[in-house]
Length: 307
Ligand code: CP
Ligand code: NVA
Image (cartoon, rainbow, N blue to C red; front, side, top):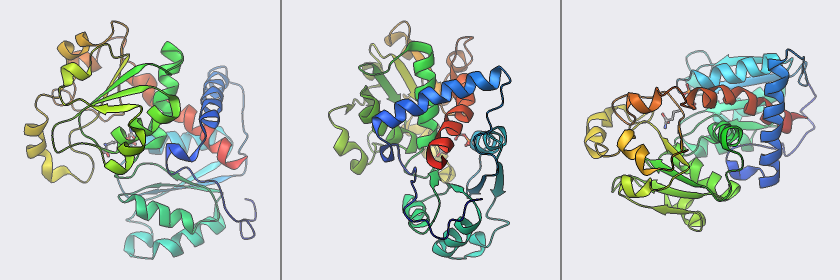
């Protein structure tokens, strides 16, 4: 543990736009190196003695395991904090929680609802804060998605990516990724479920909304989708099933895409809703590589923020 009390202005990762394009490319290269080191059993304990606090106000499988196992592999330690067990969950102010936690740990990962709460936490933290998903953004997932695309197909610059479904946190992060990695993003969403203007407006050079999913998928190099109702929207499930009925990624839609197109989904998935089983369960589906790459890319992120 380093003495954080004297430190100011830590580097945060609240959005993909918090890193430069060059930093993102270097991070992904390091992620692939870390993957090889792990596979060959070579120790890589660059964060020995460091501690990550993991604040989860929403459920998680991949994010929790990848950060916790990732810290262990780097020689450090992670502490899982759920709202049931912390004073934050009983109403201790975000500012105070951030001040206190950041006196004790080296990095803090937060999964919460409002991006503003995450920003407030980061403003009051003496150590780097990582966005592990908010209602607005899910930048850690995009690190894994970009690593996966590059490992399978090479550079994504100039390629066409088609987003099918809700204009949600994942869609917003794809919009930011289109800017950072210089690909074209076709967004196929129903009327009324478009991404937020604050995210889309600065990205109009790279992104367009095409409401018809078949048209949006034409010649795509990568097709991506996500659940129709995100965490916190469970009571809208029935309404959303109707609105998104024509937005399933199935074989017919994948046939519109390039013959070498990849399919990605951040998971968890609902087969028969946003994706057909025949697409996600293909032998060459990359969703499992995508999930695994969470650990490698986040280890590279932790190194970038902490070393
Ligand atoms: N994709 C993703 O973030 O999964 P979890 O919700 O399981 O962490
Ligand atoms: N859009 C989804 C992503 C889950 C990883 C959600 O926010 O629930």
